Length: 144
Image (tube, rainbow, N blue to C red; front, side):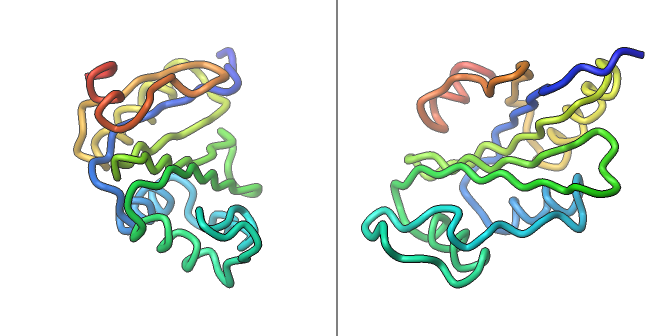
């Protein structure tokens, strides 16, 4: 079985939501590494440093019309090197992703599981780079 690196599975998750992000994180990489609070900053204050990961994520969920992508890793007990991504789009949608190093067969299992967890049939698999799209509506139109 040949391992393919940087397989990216992206699935439309609907409206942006902390609950959805947590569900995907805890399903695919429980015990993931928390993000540093200086991962990003609010759109109107480049000098502000969030106090916690939760505050940072909540800001981007509660603030309308912002774009931000987050990536979480797990460095132990993660044989397929799964990284979870959450892309918050400026039309307040959420695209969740799994980036991994695995076989073609397991890639399909992960993609199907991600679609099932998100209750969505809108998704795409790419290699190395995430798929191209402008916002949530564009993702739906391209990858339905």
